[in-house]
Length: 289
Image (cartoon, rainbow, N blue to C red; front, side, top):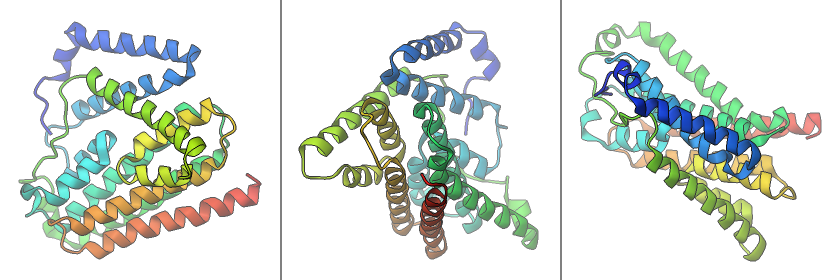
């Protein structure tokens, strides 16, 4: 993780103030045109990731890089860590933790998307993401607690670790914001067309798209929910998004060459999803949502 320009230098330049000013203006516009909420959301997440990268130490821990990279793209972190030859010599424990931190960032970002785009959803709709996030955090705490049983890991943590290359040295890349926002808008109307005109159900289309991009399909589902108020089964669609994410990441782990003991991580990805599925519907049924 390299900071080619110090953060202080960015504040001495007008570009960061222009970016933040434009972001504030977009938030005001989105308050009057709800469909445009997705644009300041995507830009805000880019700005958040930018500050996280610059505020982290230059030689930050490998796992922290995975967490921050997960805000940009957890799938990119999985592809890079599992397949890039520069990570082949890394310890299994370091690779697992990095992938789990990236998953945590993805789940946290999903919670932010639901909160920002939902309006007034009941708290039970947050459960699928929140339960899986808490479970993964517990596993990370457990693995870190066992660190003392392996003294050699203490020497290895900050020495000679390869770096995850996801940093963009600019506050907000508006080209990326426009591309992702356009993709989400296309998904919104595409999924609505599929659900209303084609025989393929919206739930199936949600699952299929989430195999490739969970964040975009979640944002499109939330945007569509605000446009078409007759939409039902929102909790089911959240579960399907998490299902697609668990399946795709399990596949990436299975096909990856750097991780040798794959069954443990695949089992955790699938079991944490199933636990979230069962508990979410149980609690929702109990409170009557």
